Amino acid sequence: MNIKEFGGEFKLIEKLSRTARNKNVIVGIGDDAAVVKFGNQKLIITSDMMCEDEHFSTTYYSPKQIGIKAMASNLSDIAAMGARPLYAIVSISLSDKTTVEVVGEIYRGLYQATDAYNVDIIGGDTTHASILVINITLFGETDNGKIITRAGARPGDVIKVTGPLGGSEAGLRLLKDKVRGFERVKKLHTEPSCRLDISDQIAHYATAMADISDGLASDLRNICKSSGVGAIINREAIPVADDVKRAALLLGTLPADLALYGGEDYELLYTLPENFSDLVPGVQIGKIISNEKIYLDNKGERTELTQFGFDHFL
Amino acid sequence: MNIKEFGGEFKLIEKLSRTARNKNVIVGIGDDAAVVKFGNQKLIITSDMMCEDEHFSTTYYSPKQIGIKAMASNLSDIAAMGARPLYAIVSISLSDKTTVEVVGEIYRGLYQATDAYNVDIIGGDTTHASILVINITLFGETDNGKIITRAGARPGDVIKVTGPLGGSEAGLRLLKDKVRGFERVKKLHTEPSCRLDISDQIAHYATAMADISDGLASDLRNICKSSGVGAIINREAIPVADDVKRAALLLGTLPADLALYGGEDYELLYTLPENFSDLVPGVQIGKIISNEKIYLDNKGERTELTQFGFDHFL
Image 1: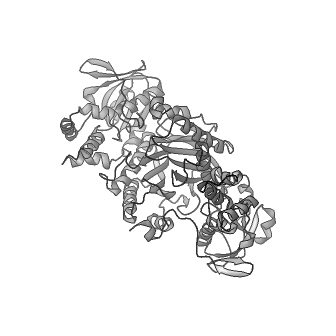
Image 2: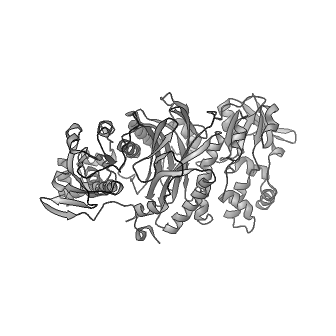
Image 3: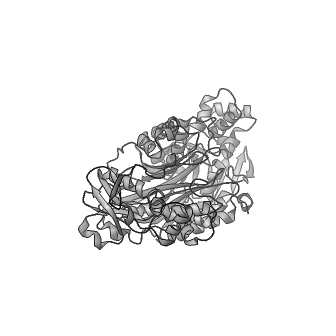
């Protein structure tokens, strides 16, 4: 059976996963990162693979941008756990087209992204294949032992995001359609940054957290599934930057749809008790409910969300 | 400049590597695995990427064998540090050809390899690309804090290997040439095992250790380089199994050449003081010398080794 018929990557991961036997595994497969007890500390581990012509194209990414993005997506997963990144393991397969200069630029991008957070690249693998592939495994720690999973959202919690969404998807479409201008929007796709700048602050209050890598709808569904709750999202409250709105108009799509189904924005999505909401940065976009469904409220008209954005196989 | 002109993968890694700034990094890029101080323990980390049509072919590997081999190569790196594996992070990109059944079989191979050593797969990434790629990052620990790097070999040490070599390369050539029979030899290539069964015992006495993944010549050179020493190898002492010798004859090559330049045997190569040699398993194949060159002794005729086996770009 092909993977599409089977139900896509999330179904597949469910099928392949096993519960860890080692009692030191605190969070296994199914969150932004895994967490294990190691010695007297908690070790937080995440891994992302980026493949040529699937996650990036060498036609509209500079080599340096490939490096920046590969590292940012991993840094973002560590941020989503309320943790701090320490070390990266970089495995890279290079194609016949890849020159020494190109690899040098990819690494310049990797180092630019890691240097901001004092992360060392301490190992990996360098090999050859028909396409360029980068896999980064990033691991980190927490200061106080507290980690934020996707599983703690409670009915009544408010839902917040750390910044405007939809920019990465808009940037991708602009690049694909070879639209001139909109340089800032394009860079939201090719040079994303993560929210390690404020994740620590949020982790003090958040009941659940995820980074927005698959799109608001999909990542919110993950939180709801893990927490056994539902949500109501106020469509009008979803923050979208002005230039992204203009890009949406040009691209013939709705700004909120870019945010809901786009992905790769690497902002943080989190829930917390309403009375703490003013203590943390971000924009409130909805509320957690006990009914295990996700509703979209559009000026008082409530519809159930049934589409959930990007799956590599659907 | 293309990577071949530049001098291949090892030169490239040297160019791209930076010294870690974090003082907790004990072993960085350039050994079988990285080692960091994490909390009150040492954490050992390795990562290997396997790409379709470069490291394996779906025409002569079963999906299960792909899983076995991907995990074995990583387990072997942990063994080479004298450490014990704990957790694996598996990132996999699947192509359009990959069915749910094929992925299931790959995982059956992964689990078969991990189950032997109580290793849990605790995370990773599942994605799509034009080729099948598996990247595994494996984390481990040591019982007593002792790790064996490539850097401790001393003049006068004897050089030992844990078992017969050249089988994997012979198996690969038999498979490529579609030679019938030699099933055991072929499986040395497609279903390798690692030497975690005895690595712990060796680690008590070894001054330096590496696994034989790139070939005896290349891996010995790594030890010599890291240790600032040289070596004399007795060509006739290099152990090669009888069926591998027969395969070599058929393939028109010399058994010792398969061992020296073949790679992927995943036996351990280690050095230790001569007076401890009888206390550990393995076959003595040579001696460490202070002159930083590697010599091959063929029935008393000594030649300097200048060819070093496999490089993905040479």
